[in-house]
Image (cartoon, rainbow, N blue to C red; front, top):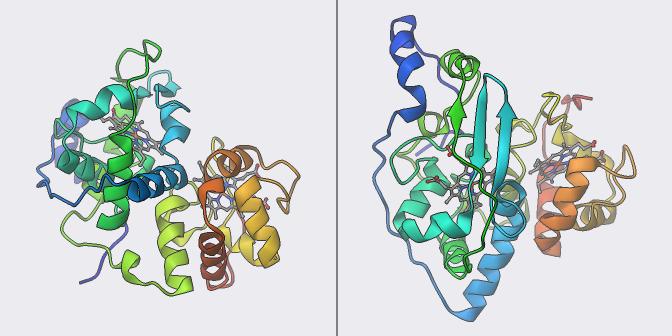
Length: 281
Ligand code: HEC
Ligand code: HEC
């Protein structure tokens, strides 16, 4: 079976009015699947490392206490909520559905939820992550209120400019990405699940959005292997500048959890990208 990375759908005009009114509250009927969640100490340590690589804290704040994720007048205000308060309400299977399918416990779409890149994460990896997340102690976070959606935000959604991941993700096929254990295969899996959301989706062509401005990942071919590993694990030694801003923060706080083999795998995979991609900046 072929697995397709989420793509945005276009809505026929006749549906738009209905959409315009209902979009933020629409629910999706994606079945729950149980996966094994281990709680032994080795698995918990690995789960903690993986939660680091998959950088849940980059959006949910360093102690998972939650923060305002987006606030654009008339578009939307979105909260990445306090995970230590949300998780106890979620069953393991509901958490699997959220992480893979961007469907919240109440059946609605999870907005801006890591851009759908987590779908291919394997049962084994996700099980360990959930095991670790279950160990988080409740943390008092700021009072953030709730999401709100403005008229421009609704219009953008209708125009297909604001992805609805719960719709774009293929819920019926299991991604084969995690099964390829060769170095390049591991690298592709990690790149798609941990990097693609900020680097322009599965084609890795970079994201020109002014809030992101990330280069095409073909840029990795300009690094020496050791320099790439050093960059990913420390945020130092970027090619274009000394401090690579958001990316350097990601490296220091999250990608420092990558093992040497994983960094090397990502590097190896990025060397196989087709030529002709140009960094978007
Ligand atoms: C790119 C930013 C981002 C990343 C990375 C991210 N989240 Fe979130 N998360 C959000 C946002 C934004 C929401 C709120 C979505 C909404 O309310 O529609 C959210 C909501 C949630 C919720 C609550 C859903 C609900 O019912 O209200 C949980 C649980 C959650 N995330 C878990 C995780 C886990 C686990 C990870 C790491 C594997 C993660 N998130 C990574 C942005 C992110
Ligand atoms: C949260 C968003 C985000 C994620 C996730 C992310 N990146 Fe980046 N990345 C950026 C941004 C933004 C830049 C541009 C930084 C700048 O030039 O200031 C960047 C730049 C880079 C660069 C170029 C640095 C240079 O030499 O100029 C490389 C290489 C890179 N990222 C690799 C990766 C890899 C590999 C992953 C996954 C392990 C990844 N990124 C995940 C946002 C992200």
